[in-house]
Image (cartoon, rainbow, N blue to C red; front, side, top):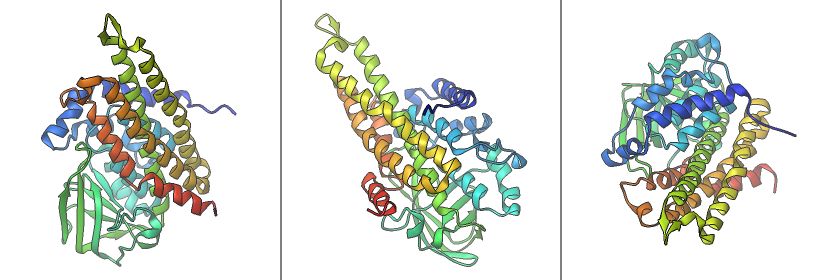
Length: 355
């Protein structure tokens, strides 16, 4: 069976890729690693392009599209290692779309679509409890407890919180009893914080959409990782076509030819994994649990290996700070760890499959 993106999906992907090619060169991606400060302007540019409303129904100002449409846009975000918010805002918007009441959707979704509001998600608990069936935090109208590794939490207008039983709640900016502790992140373009709730007021959403939100997160991370891995292959190929040694380009050397071919063979077939997982999310949600876990496990596992080989192909310059190749290695390590390591998701697939 032939499976491919349609013209609209290709067009969305090209629009975002063209925007980031212009606005996010390597020196801009590197700036976040040098200043350790967030870059919100690129996110605002994506909101201006309409990316914030891709998953939101038209009645709330969105486009009413599916996760596959958003995932193919997440690919160029990873390709250019875009710093700042994107992933968590998209997940929070999806969570409210899936789980919110009509009043909650009316109140928050238009602002999330336009970028007037910025949101994040708080999912992980103390011992790497990422999946919805492992969440323990709960409350009636107040929360007391903690969530870990929350992306761009400080200053977010809304925090979507994973609750016991796969339920979800929303904490608004400025709520009482809300404390942030910044923690170091492998990828400085994605800032992390632990959040402590101390009798913090929140609004509970009406549908237990936690498992669906986690699946979407796994798929978007896989798409981001595929974009970064494919960019790493292209960077290595381009450099090997330009760098000369002993009177010829180094790409003519057999050992490098083999290395580049091996990299391409690892990356290119992986694209179908995240496409299929997103398609299952949109059309057959029960099958998305396994497909999302497999896509995340496989693509985020090969991504760090590809970036290491890319750096090696560049020789000495690949290890320098200014050249910026390390940006993709750091993003790769982040994508691999966030929402759970590959081994954890393979074990989850085994459990879901009854092995």
